[in-house]
Length: 115
Length: 112
Image (cartoon, rainbow over all chains, first blue to last red; front, side):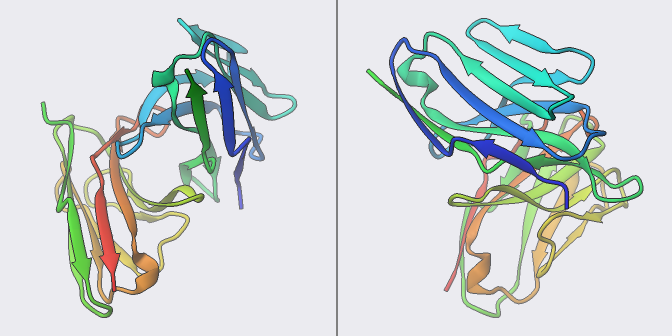
């Protein structure tokens, strides 16, 4: 079936460094790629998303890049802070047949920002 | 606005028992989803609905049933609980498939 691969599964950085999380997808028709952040014991929340008609989107310290040819997209966090510590999930729309579209999530990346 | 709410927050079941998880949203969203979250497995879609009266299978539908009789509510049923269904269950809703999903606070279910 259609899937979304996410790497790395864990990432540890020093405060102030940058963090990069990468995802690949298999459905060439995918056109929407959100990123969610889940703090410990909390619900996932959208932090940024990108559609296939743009290659990059930025929101303060967070940016997402998309390479449709290579079918991969990445989350970039600059000047990391301890409050960035969380699990990050990428996702992509996949089609499992006919008009059966759904959002498929990667397995998540545990980001730890060390003070 | 309450957003997305789930009841109950915690539940312990014995193998073979049944229960229903209730999800409610007040954002007039067409799409609603049920996910389960297990360590190292991310968020896996159980069932979803694209509108009132509709349901569709997700990635891991076996052992679960759903109903969407009212637009604002999405119910997840376990007819005969198994230890493998021990998990955290999240409900979510969205305006459309390619818009932000708003998640509920989660239900922690333990099946012994």
